[in-house]
Each structure stands twice: as C-alpha cells, then as structure tokens.
Length: 512
Image 1 (cartoon, rainbow, N blue to C red):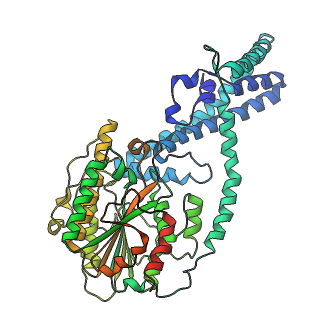
Image 2 (image 1 turned 120 degrees about the vertical axis):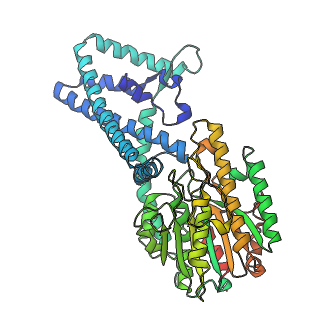
Image 3 (image 1 turned 180 degrees about the vertical axis):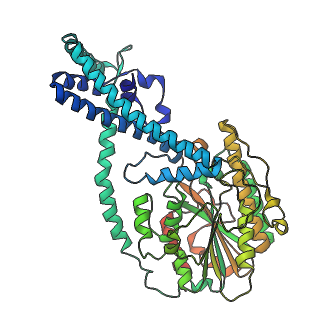
C-alpha cells in the first residue's frame, strides 16, 4: 500500500482526491516484471535503489504540495533548499524555539522514515514476487494486458480504471531541471556584466537634498485592489488616503510592477527592485550579492546619501547588507520595540516608520537619508492586527498593541484578516505621509508579492501596486511620461512593468 500510494501521490493539492489513487501505475507493472527476471543479488540491489528513488521522489512530491500551496510553483531541487531555513525562522518567530526544533525533528524523522520504509517495502515486494512463482509471472502478464487495455479505452469506456505514469514523468521533469539551472547560471553571469549606470557618479541629481523612503508592504498585491473579495474595502481605504494626501498638499502617482515571486521569497523581489535584474531563484540571488552590481541604495550612497535599512524580520547578522550598501541596519535586535510580540510579524508598521522618523529623518543635518523599510504587519498568517495609534504617542510601541492574535482555520476568516492587515498598512503609510512628508521628503511604497493561493486563488497575476508620494511637484513632473495614475490606487489599465525595469527607469528620471 505504501508503494502504491507513493506511485500515485500527486504533487498538487487540488489533485489530492480519492480518484487519484484509483489508477494502475505503469511503474508498478514494469517494476514487477523487471524484479521477476533478475537474479537474487542483483534483484536486491535494484530493489534497494528503486526504493531509495521512490522515497526521494515522494519527499519531493510532498515539498511540491507545500510550494504550490504557498508559492504557486514547484519545489526546485537545485535552488530551493534554503527555503527550509526560512521556514524554521518563521516557525520560531511565530510559535517559539521549542516548536521550531520540534518541527525540524519531526521533518527529519519523517524524511528518514519515508526513505527507510520505502526501501524495505520494495525489497519485501520483490521477495514476495519470487516466492509466488509461477503465479506472479502470470499475474504480471495479465496486469500488463489490463494496463494497455485501460490506457487505450479508459477514457471512453465507463467503469474501466485509469492508468498512470505520473511518477516516471515527475522524476524525468525533476532531473531535467538540472541542465536548465546550469544554463540559467551562465545566462545570469552575462546579465550581471552589463550595467550602463555602473561607472556613473553623482546620480540622482533630481532628488538632491531630499530624504527618500522605500517601503515594501508585505503581501500587497494586485488582488487586494481588484479582487471582489477585497476591492470594495481596500479601494475605499486607498480613495480616502488619496483625498487626505491631496488635502495635505501631497501628490501621488501609482502603477504596477510584476514581481518575480508570489506567496513568499520577499528577498527575491527586493533584490530585483534594487538591482534592475530579474532575481527569481536563490542561485541568482547568491550570484547577485557576491557581485559589484550597482543597486539603488548604492547609487544613493555614492551620491552622498546616508543609507538605512529597517528590517524587523532580521534576527541576526545579515552579510548581504554590505552588498546593498547600508550604513545602518535596524533589525529586531536594535529597533527598541518594547510592545508585546505575540507572533513573528509583531513589530507594527507604524512603529517602524515612527522609529525611522525619530532616529534618522528628524535629525538636523545636511546629509539626506535613503531608507528601506520592510514591513511585516501584513505577513502571513494574518492573525495579528496592530492598533493604529496617534503618531505622537507611538513611543516604545506599547500604544500599538492590538490584542491577542486571532487564530483561525476558516479560509474566509483568514481572507478577511488578510484584508484588514493590508488596510492597516495602507492607513499607516498615508497617515505617515500626511503628518511627516515635507518638501524635502519622498515616499515610495509598493508590494513585494501577491499572498499565497489561499488568499488569491491559483491563477492570480504576479503584479503588485507601486506608488510615489511627494510634496515638491518637481519630483512627480520627472515621471510624468510614465503614464501612472493620479493618487495611490493604480488604475486597471495603468502601465505594468517587470519589477527589474524600475531601477533603470528611476535612475534615468532623476539623473539630471
């Protein structure tokens, strides 16, 4: 039963139905025939190798189920192992170190158990076939005929079982990715070598003397603005925010960017946005951060801005910070947040913006600041909604406490909580701009990626909104040719660029 289930196990959640396991796997027919004709020692070796291979494929299928559910794509055996470390950090931040260690131990036990049991199962089946001679040979021959008949007529004759060769195809497709990965690496090295801004100094003259804040809103995607499940409430918040900014003398323009990731992997979006290169896997990210590519933050730094990162998700040393060119990084260890932390994403967006304002932007001085803020209030599992406090009372974060997390397994309730966290993040940003943005400040905020398929469905676009807000009209005059929508809600027909296009367009617009 274990071997049978492993051969028929699908790698997509929507295919995981009883019908999926009422099929005849060709691998079982061919495998039994091969084991029957092999001599004793060779048969045991082949059975062992087949058991290991089937165990590995089963583990990868399970990983695929998780990746499709969260990231809308399959697990990549070349690039994606580092995601397991991120999963550990997320569980630790959400449920504690004991839970993270327990989950890791359980995963290792399951992995070893699947491999060991699969080997034992295949070897036992091979011995059973030999012990049942000559009946086993007749049974395999009959099953072969049945398989071909069902393969030919199973879709047209009612009552005939379906056939399957999905595991063979799955294994073939998995190993076929290896040469593609090697080719992608070579292609990316060529892309890294081309950078028309690399040797230019004193860029961004059009923003001289202005503080610029880039803010990524976690899981803020196109669906939040256009999906009927969220649009009426979220759009009302956007319309209200646009009106308040206009009253405050601020102007905003909005468009769309296509993210290189969905459901997670925010660092891929961040690095794509800043580097001007398409970073859609870990190999590209590692190659990028080992290069001397000019990022937006480095461009500002080379032009005499002080570069700051506000990253509450960081819990330790982050070597990539040197590549991005940060003079100062505020992370979970030095942000000074003293409010309750009921889960991983518990440092509210409002506190992050308030901290940046007090620690960096409000300080008198001639050196402008460029800052990146990676917000987490709208991060999965969307069970904690901070309180939006008066800006003058944010202090150490106590005033932003929103109460205990609202844990639920009801999909509709999770979607509601997702929408509420997005609304909180948008109100926070527009409130910040309304209170603090002057002639010498510019705010850029955008989504990093769409949320998981549970929230947006299986076929959602990978687009995210992006907005630029400024008080000085000359700032937005420079991007007039972009055709972006007035206000902080991009129109459905507003321009859509791939996220890697933004760096060059931004540097070109503000380079003189």
